[in-house]
Every structure is written in structure tokens, then in C-alpha cells.
Amino acid sequence: MSHIVIISGSPTPGSRLNGVIQRVESKWIEQGIKISHIRVSELPAEALLHANFKDEKILDALALVESASGVVIASPVYKASFTGILKAFLDLFPQTGLKGKATLPLFIGGTIAHLLSLDYALKPILSVLGSRNILGGVYAIDQWVQRLDDGGFELSEELKERLDRSAEEMAEEITWIGIRSKEKIVIS
Image (cartoon, rainbow, N blue to C red; front, side, top):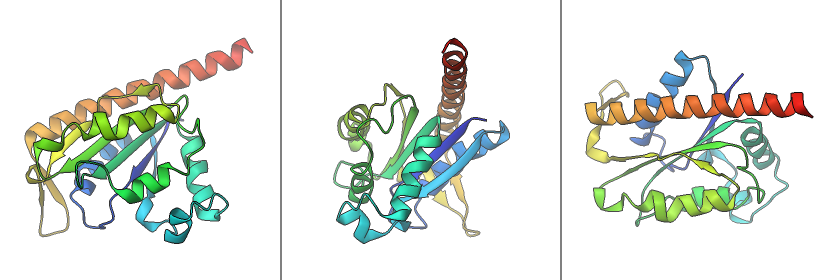
């Protein structure tokens, strides 16, 4: 079964980023893809700050990433980059922690001016971690995601379309990863 891990680097539980994540997640659930979540803000802060590679919760989170065929890296943008808490978690990944995985960046920020944070801040790190299949990703603007009174989110039509295309692209990529993986097993 295909498996996607969604890593959220938001320090805020009610972040608009959740609306973005929920949209792609719902598309994958419809397709029968297993979804797991890592909310970096819920990992032990001391273990993150002191790079404690032996912390049980950190090891569990890294094992979840290792078991996945696809990884979503989601974060709000602060100061033209993703959050520091997300960087602290990525620093704990093994050198090839994303090798053989499709990765999909999902960012949200206050202005379009930080659009290039995907390409200049995140993608080089994903590449260093072994990801050779980094999808284009989606950068959303805060005003495209409205909070609803019931706690949900309403996304602009343009954002929904872009997220749906990215969700479909990710589903296709992890399917190919699964096929290639099975071919290697048969050949070996």
C-alpha cells in the first residue's frame, strides 16, 4: 500500500496551513493511500534543540518517514523561509533520509514575495537529504485560505485546483516508486 507522511512545520495548531494540508490529504484518502502525520511542534522541544538522535519520539518520527514512499514538507513562511522548528527536525534526518521518496513542498505565507522560498530555502535541503524526486510544490497566500466559524477552512478556487493537481502528481509518483520497488525485488 502507498504511504505518504505529511510533516507540518507549523508552530500554531490553528494555522491556515492545515486547510492546505487537509485538501491534499482528502484527495489521497479517496484513492486509498495511507496517510500519517508528523507535527513537529508536538515532538520534544529539548530533543529537537539539542539534536538528540536517540530520543524515542524522534526515532519514531524518523521511522515513519523511512516507511513512506512520499513525504509532504509543509510550513508557513516566516522571514522568507520555512520555520526554524522544521529545520531543526530536518537536521535530524539521516544523510539519505529522503532517498527514493517523492517529496511535495506545501508552503503558505503572507505575500507572494516569498514564493521563491520553496526553491531557494527548502529544495536544496531536500536534495542534500537524498530526494531526487522533488515535485514543484504549492505556495499559497494567507488570504486564499479563510478560517470558518466551525473551525474548518475555505480555500480559493485557484488554490483548490493547484492543490488537486499536486495531489494527483504525488499519487502518480508514489505509484511509480512502488512499481520500481517491486521490479527491484523481482530482479534481485
